[in-house]
Length: 137
Image (cartoon, rainbow, N blue to C red; front, top):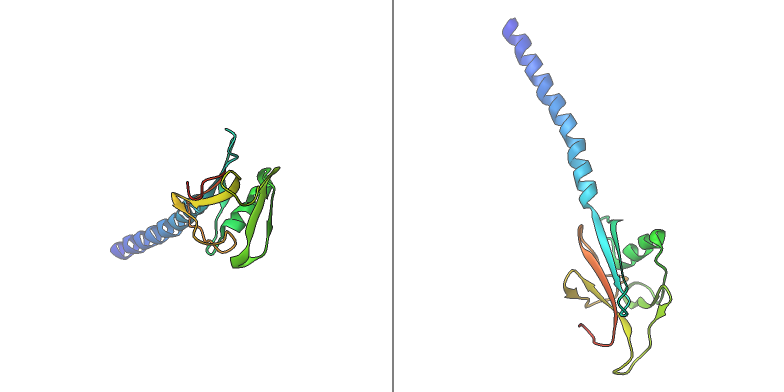
C-alpha cells in the first residue's frame, strides 16, 4: 500500500508540474508573438516601436493599425492586394520621378514584393518603412 501511495503522489506531482509548465510556455510564446516597426523618415529621424502584437495571418497593415496606439498615423488607398501606403505621420509620397521620395517597405531584410495589405508577417519580424528615392534600396 505504501508503494501505491508513492506512485499516486508521484503521478499527481508529474501532472501538477505539467499543468504548471504549460502556462509558462504560453507566456513565453505570447512574449515572442510580437513584431517591431521601424520608420525611417529619410531625414535622419527614425522611430522604432517594439512589442506590437502578432497573430496568425497578421499583415503589415495590421502592424500599422496596432502602431496607431503608439503615435503613428498613416493613410493609404485601396484594400487587400491593392492597398497602397500614401503617408506616414506628416510625410506623404511625392509621386513618380527619379528625385521624388516615396514610402518603401521591407520585412526583415527583404524588399516587399506585394501590397502591405496582404503581406503577412511572422513573430519577431521587423517591418521597415523607408522614405527614399531609390526603389528597393
